[in-house]
Length: 376
Ligand SMILES: [Zn+2]
Image (cartoon, rainbow, N blue to C red):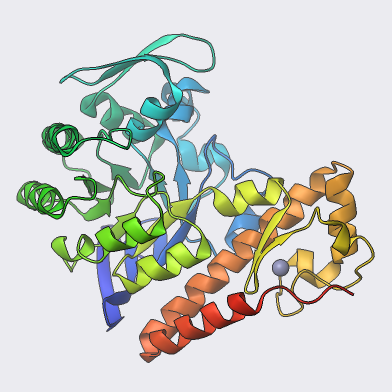
């Protein structure tokens, strides 16, 4: 245990890295996948079950929590860790992305964003200073700078103006965050798909100085090829001795490609959201449990998987409970998906340590290409 936030790099393989983020609330093995606990819960999962799938850290959403139950109430109740019964590290986003995608009647100025709640229409303001205040009230271990990300497609001029506003907000976030030993503040690189703008953003962030750096403004519908083309250069613009976080990614093959390009941390709602819509992610690709082919199938989702859904239940049972709208369908499929994601991360970490990442990735793609087991 440590009373400080720090990052130790253990090994590299090509651009890929494996290491450990040390925090007073525990260690985070990287590359790390962070399940999303939007409203102070990873939907359909107990926190101890999320931990059992292999998660070292969760993500919480500032926008949702500030509206309901409010950051002030969570602070009065002892902070987010105690409130949701998760004593390990928590990263909170700044609210910037979600206020632009969810809130009504938004008004963006140099000061920040005024908006109406999507829940009850109440009026709120998010600014760098208010976002830092909320994330402190929540007790977040890794705090994200308040930034702005223009809706795509946008012209290069719009992306440049937005990025420069985000860099001014990054300085204000740094100033408002202050000195909080044991807590980290991450800067967020913007600049869309333009290399020069990404470089300008990286230089501005490095001049301010952060405990970690995120690649922002990707995974917003640009497609994997475009995302990878940015990740071919963007992570290398950020300091090598600090964690690099790709926000909102992604599908298993997005994660593998991002890790190959030097990303250390990722988050996505996909494994939990898919679990609630009958989609399972396995080493053989995506399985739609709603499909009638599973109705009489006594085999597990994946005979090699050690999660409770695969150990104790058949495809036929999962199909039945999903079709019947039973809550256990979401619980079992979410558990399996998170288990699969964390097993993939463990495999990536082991391969980077062993210097065998290329072979691991080739095998990952070969298994997916072979597809699901044949129907009975
Ligand atoms: Zn499983």
